[in-house]
Image 1: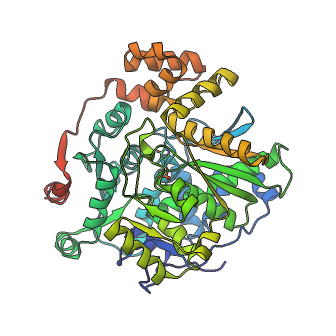
Image 2 (image 1 turned 90 degrees about the vertical axis):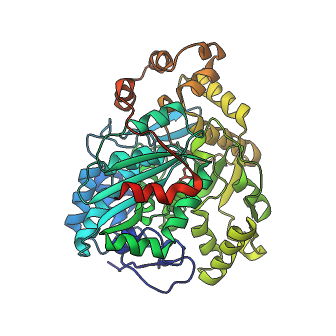
Length: 495
Ligand SMILES: *Cc1c(COP(=O)(O)O)cnc(C)c1O
């Protein structure tokens, strides 16, 4: 197998093994790690269709994580995709109203972040062992709501690690917040910041770039890493479920071998859809990558105009995990459409950090032809939940509803009737109030826990364990801070 190494999107010439790139999280020059080439699938789709999730995940990830031994990688996979998931299929497909919903929310924290964050701690501790790292790894994470809990669940009580999560105090759903602040584990810390997700993410990136701080902590025996989707160890596991979805459709005879499908993804930080882009470039027959945004439609505007401009009003929506104006992983796509020119990529990212915007050239824009951008506003999102429920009895969450709406819009606009896989990124139980109000505004009179019981009856599904757990769990984290105090908070935790 060809060895794959990783280098920065911004020109730092160091080439790292996969395990070192996972340990580091972010490149020294502030860029993101990208593989020096995108490997092609080396098994046929038919062969992959005969495998279970774990077997298929190995076949995909071995091509990227080439310095992990077969035994190491298989052990990581077995430890990640086990009974923490409430179905052996791990990521089941559900057909509704003419589209396939790929349910990525069957893990411990009922959002798609579990697909990668169940695995990342294992990849990271294996990487530490392989590379003889004798420091305690401190995971710093900014969250728009779901990454935080999934990372906490993954890293809690993992020896040799600590985790600090920053979330926007007023920018997550009540259930998301409750899930995080009830987290157990002596190595965990959860902090509500007075700011939005972009503030949290920028703050974390700044701390990563603070060489003096890193040196200080190094002396104390700590090293930082990231569990955000800027870490390549988050991205690679996400490629697997697109291959899995395709091969399930193939196995069930819903598509022919080689037939092209479209993929539609509710997008925030651009990690999930970028994984679909990698899957396509590995040879998976995907035609369009449909990128769905909520009212914070900075990506839609970018696909339309070629200008990325974060200078705009920030909206708090009912799909909070997509309330993002700086989509970090777009940087990796920019790198590719610039012809893997890291100098050019660095130039654009500098414009983004100084003036909040950049414009790509016409030839770069041509590289976006595989993408279609769309968005749904709050009313359209709510109506889509209602429509899907009324027509099929299937209940989707607010994020998935954004994608579902944009998918319908894409079909109507283009007449393209290729099968579509919609990434269903969160359980409706995570956003119960918004979901139930969309079905009937009368529900708004009820308490959160009454709504959960009603949702179970209405959708004929079992209440997930993650929800049962927070009904009675005590609040263990009460720290809040301003955006310029994040560093002090970390210093306090690592004393
Ligand atoms: C994180 C998240 C998204 C956005 O995914 P990105 O990879 O950041 O684009 C969408 N929906 C849900 C429920 C999420 O948790």
